[in-house]
Image 1 (tube, rainbow, N blue to C red):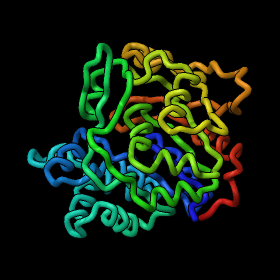
Image 2: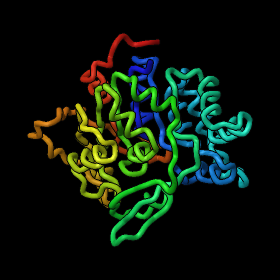
Image 3: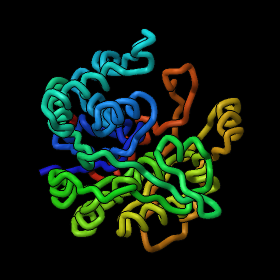
Image 4: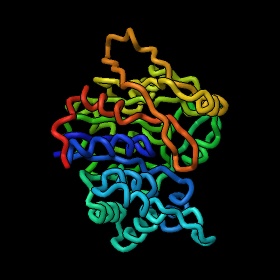
Length: 320
């Protein structure tokens, strides 16, 4: 039985998984399958398969030899014909064709990397995210929604898809389910649009936890406070969270913050200090890390992640 389940997508999920894997070897990551940009977007259309990118990132995060395998699976080709494709995406695409199954391909990649825990795509289907924005117009495609930078009224899938049975079983039997961090409408919410996930989450007797983003995102959450984030996730997931974590930006170089401000991104304001219906806990302070493109970005620090895990009683004896 999976003691802890993390639900999300993108970089937020993998950031927490890298730390938590050392304390919970039965960890399960449930990853969204609506990414349609870059290498993932090309492969999903060319091979009629779910996008491999977010799954790849999280398989790497749980890998036994993470530093070396990160370099291998994250390597991006420079040759013109393959420009922009990551080696990890190509490997997972090849495994998908070999096994004629995306979940089996993810399992095979997980075995290759000897991961601690498991990574599950939320569904095994080609599906697109659709957003209704201001004035009743619609945008189809996760990458287009993110790039538009428009205020989002609601999101939905372009067709009905069923969650993997393993996903539903993991959620229903978990002791703790952590939602986020991650892009609100394009990484976190899409998981709950897949048939069965919302119902399984509602039936689960797990401790239900939401970890909020540190910064808002243009369009997706422009001007959103902590309560705004929580309201959206609770609306789509159908539950009231037992605990909510909010992390302070802390002392960040003005030049870095100014770059965020220029693109319309601000620190998420905690407006739930007096909310008595739910327990809101400080997740410590953030840190600056290099995003691999010589840019400093705000992320949850290892110390902030450890403080959150400690609060959740998830820090048992560290597993080697």
